[in-house]
Length: 211
Image 1 (tube, helix red, strand yellow):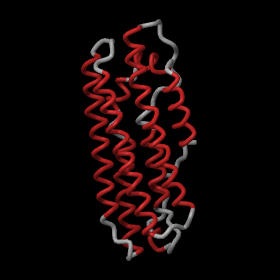
Image 2 (cartoon, one colour; image 1 turned 120 degrees about the vertical axis):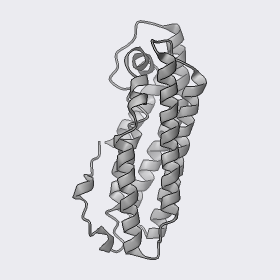
Image 3 (tube, rainbow, N blue to C red; image 1 turned 60 degrees about the vertical axis):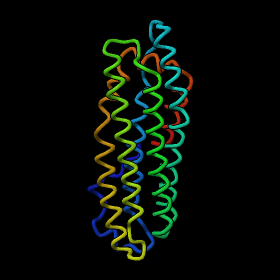
């Protein structure tokens, strides 16, 4: 996975003119956020549970297009990082990326909700916890979009400082808050999901985005 240590980015980044090293922190945070969707790879095959396999297929088929949306959002921010984009361009790109991320996590939460409880022990609780978590992540990205939309693009120093604050929030989001989703994907559920071609495809998409 791409890794930009937050602490290694100079606190003087706001003085670098059209070069936006601060935005690299957004790339790092988004790359970390994408992992929240798919902790699916590396699972072994299950012993054959038709109900669980059907549940996994329903969820995986819904996750695949959302994983691609997350990948595209990450790629868009990465492109702005390398293109010496203006503050206005960075703001527009980041705003759309955050909205897309919010929409993607909301859609995944909806898919897990519609799928019902997986046929495993404590399946209902695991499902409900994951839906709540995914909706919370969606709301967090929506809030970040509002924050980036309010940044002052006319003042380079203030804009970069604002991006730095957003990157800090993104870092917190990408390093916490995925426990329920991971719990849902443990054991038989993860095994069943790993068998689905759409989850394999989505996992590959995420891996490519984060490499």
